[in-house]
Length: 156
Image 1 (cartoon, rainbow, N blue to C red):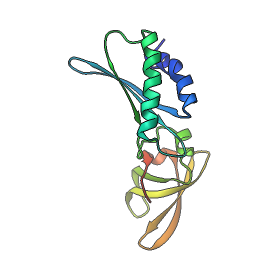
Image 2 (cartoon, rainbow, N blue to C red):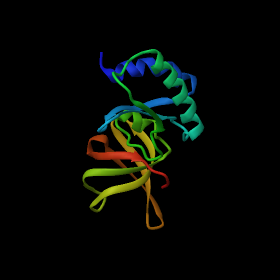
Image 3 (cartoon, rainbow, N blue to C red):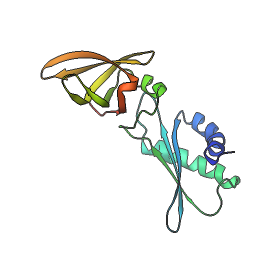
Image 4 (tube, rainbow, N blue to C red):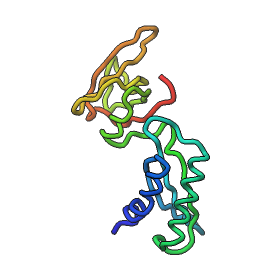
């Protein structure tokens, strides 16, 4: 079984208990040490440092009981970030009514490659956003396939 999958299955009850979701698991091999980085998130709100600490303590206790990783390593539990990348359509759907930053594969809207907007609606693979151009609020729809990268934004 894949290491990330093993860790995910092991820590799942802890994440549920703390009402957080797993964003990513990375095992980083540095010159003399390993770091297991677990990024967590909440769909509707940000995560504070106290939550990260509590989740880290509980995960650490679990990992100490089961040898999932060979050798010594450091555990880091962190927030996925206020401007985290939305990696798939499901994550995009979870960002409805939130500010987003979009980078397009090809220019749209008068040669714009980038757009800071608020995600209004997602249907099938079509996103509808509102954005401001000068003092005017406008709306535009585009296909998920036109996006090179999309992430949450702090403000719109």
